[in-house]
Length: 241
Image (cartoon, rainbow, N blue to C red; front, side):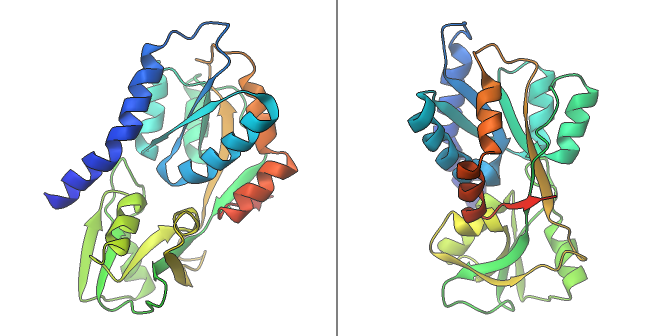
């Protein structure tokens, strides 16, 4: 019950912003853009959006969403101009005819075991995501493949919740994306998850077929510019060939 209440509390600002965006007509003279992305990408993309606004004057509102919910939203015509998500989801979206061609630049988001700075134990309470529409990582199964046997596994909806459990002391270690670690200076990597055990997720960006505002392609192109790629790298996203 506590975890559910926590998720709802943290989700309220994003939900309010999303409802406000959906209630605003997407008219041609509105230059602000709406971007939907995996939850773990939101802090990095907000920094890039701020840099883009400084350069172009265009605001990009970033709405984090569980990866399993992005395609259903697009199929149901929920207004978004840009989507940044896993390439496998973009492939499905392309087949459904709801996105344009995806950005050719791709990024890797390594999975790591993390904890608070100075915490190097993985045999206590361990936070890991349960497989759900909010996260496609089966945390308990991954721990088994890694040969890790903590005293207790604390289930979480997504890696955002794992980070919350770590920073509140409810768990001593947890499975996070590198972007989750870089987004909170209290967190540090204990050790990486070998790619042969869990390959890093691949991400790319695309303009959606629902885009009604001017030039969403401008922001997608900016994501491939050096200024943006340097910011994304600092946030934990590695450029993929």
